[in-house]
Image (tube, rainbow, N blue to C red; front, side, top):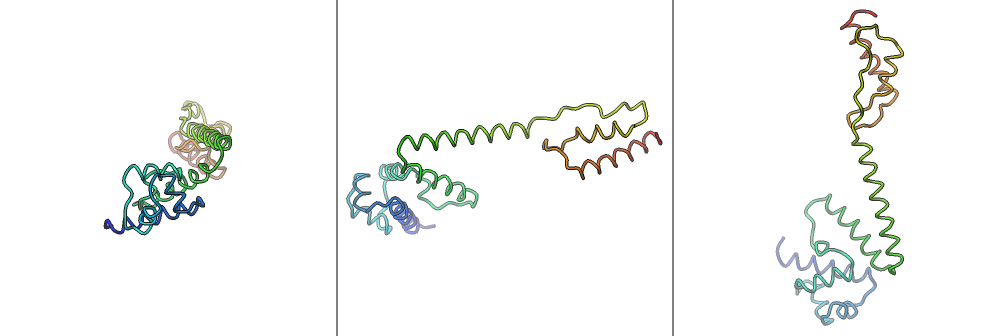
Amino acid sequence: MEIEQINKYVGSKIKDYRKSFGLSQEELAKKIGVGKTTISNYEVGIRSPKKPQMIKLSEVFGITIDDFFPQTGSIKVNVSTTLSEINKISSQLEEPRQKVVLDTASSQLKEQEKSKRAVKSKPKVTPLFDITSPLTDEELQEAVDEAVAFDGVPLTDREKELYKHLLRETWEEDHGRG
């Protein structure tokens, strides 16, 4: 992407954010300490904001500077768009309501981390049955009831039946009929 195209892209993002916040060019200009015509020039791509103005713009809109530029990966676009929306909306809230958003996000993060820990915890390894005595149906059922997939997720009933069948066949092949 060439410089002119980037300037136009950045300008269109500034215009989009300004309009979504319900600001006029003059109001935005006052907030970041530039003239109204400067904002107009940014929006049409004639001029590009310098670093101090980019920082002020990102603060006004509650976004990162990166949000003004085109993204290269589709995953990053989706994440960036979601975070941008959250920032855009929450920055318009009064501080007590922003605290509610922060508390909710913190709670969601704790829940997510707890969920990840639960999935990642390694299942205990226990002997399935005594290999010197015949395999009973009860031992076989207990073995598959305690089994979990590699990711720690419990097996479905269908998977349990399949494993039970496979264990029975393997046992009988290795030890003869019990």
